[in-house]
Image (spheres, rainbow, N blue to C red):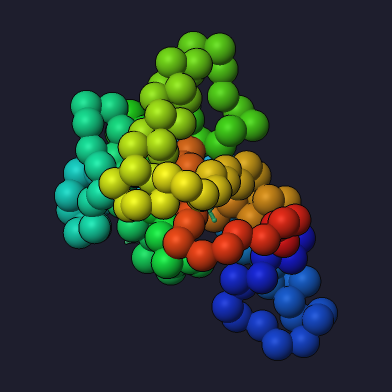
Length: 144
Ligand code: TR5
């Protein structure tokens, strides 16, 4: 698995090794993540939108002029999209609706992208389900 953001390698062989390691470390274990600390306000974040069930805050490493993460406040098994259950239907809709509100608040309603990386092959790095809301520049297709 090659995740381009992998910061700790130079050669191709090293890169492969490092990526495999990162994937193993990052695999969905169900353990608490950094996002729990953001939800509990133990770590500061730049909050864009918040309600009872959803929190939206700016990504620490923005890939576009607007890059906001939308997450459920109660993870309740929502580690990655590939593992959601029928009971998660309502919160999944609320997350998507929150993404629309974020786009409006950020002034990018005319064009924006919503991304969910699910699993190591998609370079998911934080196993607390999150939507990336990206915009403020021309978004290209296909994504990498
Ligand atoms: O790679 P996936 O799809 O799992 O996305 C995880 C995202 O979380 C990345 O875009 C990271 O840049 C972002 N991230 C990681 C941390 C973090 C964050 N966004 C805001 N604040 C953060 N803190 C305080 N700590 C992080 N480790």
